[in-house]
Length: 86
Image (cartoon, rainbow, N blue to C red; front, side, top):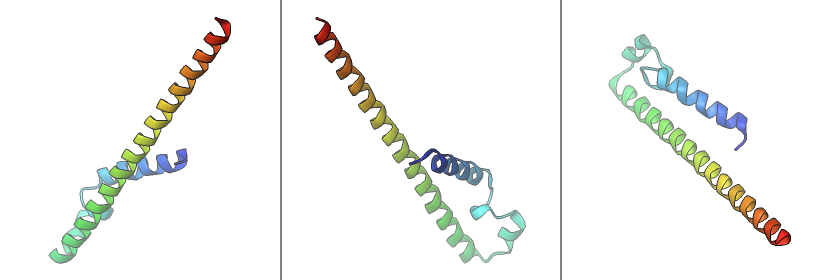
């Protein structure tokens, strides 16, 4: 995932966390909705939040794999250099 998408995902997550009502609604709009619609929107918001958390975990996991691979390559390079010098 490129850095722009990561930044956008984090920004959306932060903005979603600032909202008191699902889907970024204000209190007045939320209170005018029928209970069934509120429940539906709350479920949708929960699903979106869940997907954002999963995506953040996927990004974290990918970055950890890349760091591990970089470390493996670094150690392999050092071993090769030491063998040539020794």
